[in-house]
Image 1 (tube, rainbow, N blue to C red):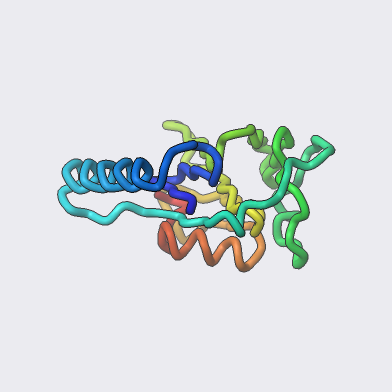
Image 2: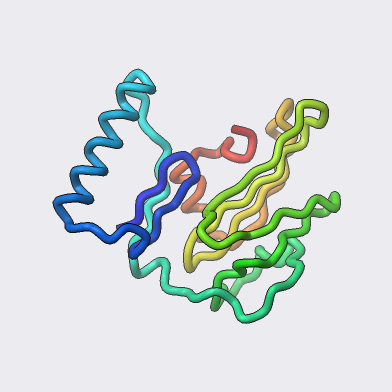
Length: 157
């Protein structure tokens, strides 16, 4: 089982612990989140071991976000590569990082990406003052997983 809290994903094998230890950590984390958020539910993206089997890609390259809309699932994880947004913004995909975002106090544009395991990456560009202007790239299955976990407005949050 993989656990994600607010955009961070832990994949199977990241933490080597017994089942009882993992249950204790998950329970403690859930109780802490309930205490900190006033009983609000945490946004969670769940990926199990069968959904996180791809190894890193052998080639590091620039990836236009439009390529994330491919029909075929990716055969590898683009670790070390860089996503390129239509406005020229670039974001690197680093090992051990499952999601990232950029925001500025002077520019209302926000860029983000989320690794959805074997389903591929999902990237978004949004105007934080007007969420209806958000553009999302990724395979339909990957986008669906992200929306189920974080809601329709995730690019703007």
